[in-house]
Amino acid sequence: MEKFIIHGGRKLEGEVVVSGAKNAAVAIIPAVILSEDVCVLENIPNISDVFVLFKILHEMGAKIEVLNKSTVRIDSRFIRQPVVPYELTKYMRASYYFIGALLGRFSRASVSMPGGCDFGVRPIDQHIKAFESIGARVNLEHGMIDVYADELVGNQIYFDVVSVGATMNIMLAAVKAKGLTVIENAAKEPHIVDLANFLNSMGADVRGAGTDVIKIRGVDHMHGADYSIIPDQIEAGTYMVAAAATRGDVLVKNVIPKHLESITAKLIKCGVEVEEFDDAIRVAGVKRPQKSSLKTMPHPGFPTDMQPQMTVLLSLAEGTSIVTEGVWDNRFRYVDELRRMGASVSVDGKVAVVEGVEKLTGAPVKATDLRAGAALIIAGLAADGTTEIEDINHIERGYDDIVGKFTQLGADIRKIEIPDSQLAQAL
Ligand code: EPZ
Image (cartoon, rainbow, N blue to C red; front, side, top):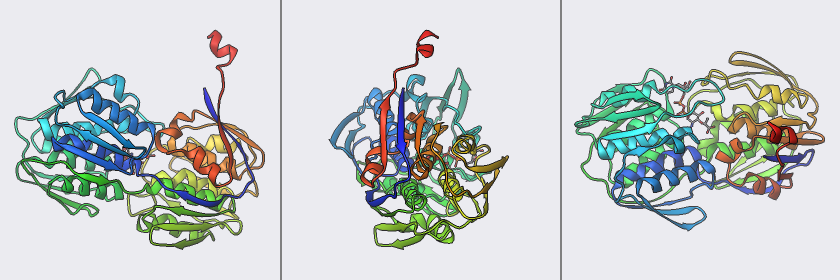
């Protein structure tokens, strides 16, 4: 078993370079299937979710060539099998984007149901509703999602709930459907726009991404493309909050400041100094943060994927803050771990009351999911003493070289291998 060991209490200082956006990459990589050609993708983050996607593509018959640590060349001309088996999808949820991409190219797909997640139920009813709207039949049995269409025909789709995944998935399926597809109540995250830009670079006709209404006119053929993925808004935000929580001074490079507006605004409200440049942002935590309440919302609201990290900062603030989770049903599971470090947070459903304390103290904790794990790292960096974090696989799913990047900023953090305990070996 692997753990992170953190000796806290050191200010983070220096520069960190943000990698490509995980939540854009996990949709753009399956999208290459639509091209029936060769694509070169740049600024790919080195994270386990991406490695799983490449393995799936390879199993399907794609040829993948690594050109350098963040650039790959993918030839999807020889893909024949529109099937993604369980033994590959069980490692990550976003494998469901292969349904939309395979449906778009082959008019059929068979993909294992996505796993659950650590913050409540993650339904796919909106994905299914959208696929059925353009003429697909969807069958769920034996843990597989089987989708089939004689012909995909564009249609009007209105999402009952704003869903990043469902918006991405129907974009993938509709780019080669006959006629016009209009998606209303669409998600507007930066990664939605990035996928649309990638699809258009392959010859698709997608308009309105980033607004509530996306219009897609089907095309007969999509060619290859060279494309660079946008920087990761949540990775950038994570380092911004870490700088503030450790009273540090960090220049976060390779960012698109516009994507960080809600995070920047919240940090400034907490009394953190933030300075924007063209493709970088400087964050200095000059004094104890002030309390501030927040509610997570779909973009352009405060991102839910920054909620745990921000709650850690507020747990050190002067005064009491209210954090409301507006997207997921149960995204406060990490608070039990944070309490072990001295935080004073009480949770009632989707609302956390965060009473700021002077200091957190290091303790052994567990990462319950990706962003919770990142938040616990921030807590450990700010805390007095030593923090050990278990279940770090969650964190490495979505953060490229997080130990290296924090170390470069002066953190005392390292990954160690712990042999399974005698008890674990005996069981
Ligand atoms: C994406 O998940 C992200 N994951 C999540 O980030 C992020 O938290 C979420 O969007 C919201 O921004 C990826 O992009 C891989 P949703 P997704 O569909 O697409 C409900 C991270 O840390 N819903 O926008 O699964 C759902 O229950 C991860 O990087 C339905 O009811 O999220 C939720 O309450 C964690 N029916 C809300 O919509 C559906 O068919 C938003 O979910 C789909 C969703």
